[in-house]
Image 1 (cartoon, rainbow, N blue to C red):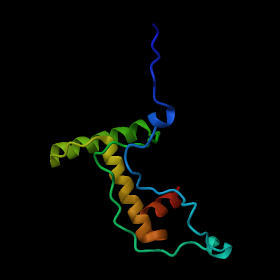
Image 2 (cartoon, one colour; image 1 turned 90 degrees about the vertical axis):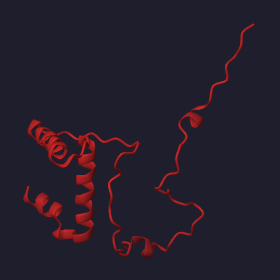
Image 3 (spheres, rainbow, N blue to C red; image 1 turned 45 degrees about the horizontal axis):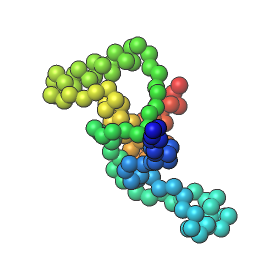
Image 4 (tube, rainbow, N blue to C red; image 1 turned 60 degrees about the vertical axis):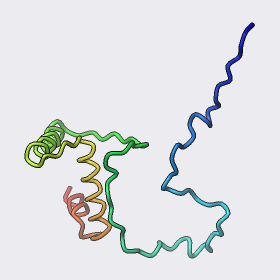
Length: 121
């Protein structure tokens, strides 16, 4: 007698396991008139930007660096461990650096370090 195993469908296998903090567009919400939609949103006071820290990350991004940049990053990791007692991985250092740069860009706009450095290249 052959038994047939019931397996879950793809939508059940790949369902979100946690509530997403990024909300998609709400189809039931009224849409603004065309001239309001074209206008950029008013600039609000930016909330303090914090990196995600030690959590399970759902997204992945590949960044290519030179061997010197990778050695500098590893040296920073070892310095944090040796002199500051912080055992962090390279990814955490990169997430902290990205959070700092983005917060500076939001706070200072054209006067941010990111805009200055990218303008020099």
